[in-house]
Image (tube, rainbow, N blue to C red):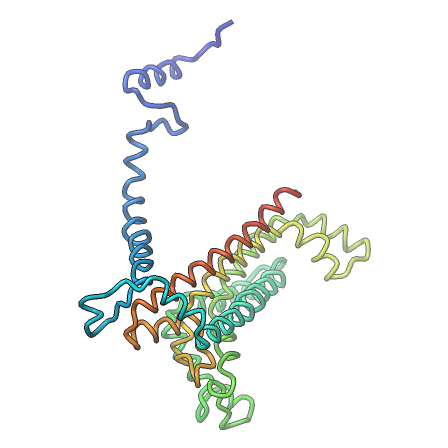
Amino acid sequence: MAPVTSPPDQAVKGRRRATGAAPDAAGLGRARATGFLVPGMVLILLFLVVPAAWTIYLGVTNYRLTGLAAANPEVVGLDNYTRALTDERFRSSLVLTLQFVLGSAVIGQAGLGFAIAYALRDRRGPLRRLVEGFVLLSWILPSSVVAFLWIALLDRDGGTLNALLGIPGTAWLLDHPMLSIIVFNTWRGTAFSMMLYAAALENVPRSHLETARLAGAGTWQQLRDVVFPRIRGHVLTNLLLISLWTFNDFAPFLITAGGPEQRSEILPVYVYKVALSGGELGFGAAISFVMLLINLVIALVYLRMLGRRKETA
């Protein structure tokens, strides 16, 4: 027996046959759907694909900002990549970058963001709004303003931190540069993790936590057996995003400039000094492409972990 179709359905099918439009959920058809996609694809091509291709090309040349190599660059093959992988300064910057990502993103932003979200999950009223407001304020302030505030806080002579601790003359940015930029970036980026975890915790049933509490489970046991299994996907997504953002973050340059003696020279700062300050644009492009490959590895690891979670769900 043939299915019965309503008049509106018959009218839609009639229009599709008349216009030759392929059936789809929105009823746009292939031509109009393509028209919606073209502007976005053009922007992606201009601002992502073309710069990436240009960077790859520069990485195999000796292109410089000034001199003969700027006017007539030559293709040098993989020489820039070989130089980067054998450069002690590059390896040192890579190690510092991994420390920066681990301390600032994985431990700092993710850990502090979850702690704030979990502490405020059952609270309502002005206290919660006040805490969330201060955390969000640190996120929306421009990096240059935040850097100025932290320089004023950590200054050796008139710094606020030294005045509060009663230890005048302590040069935090000179004696502890990596710790300074890790704490600086943790304070600056915690808001994103806090908001993501706050939304994720709303999906944890209160009855499950209450049942665990009545069964005698402590706070850690509730987190391990009830909370984390429910928000594991959110945790992995958050770690993926903030790890990639932190790996490519240039803001620490504003408070330490990679010093002293390159002790806080993470890879984005190293690329800036080599490519722009040093004028070796080809070598800097090669390092940038190596950074892209490292980002891909980080992303693949997290995506693999997300895939395993879905398989076991």
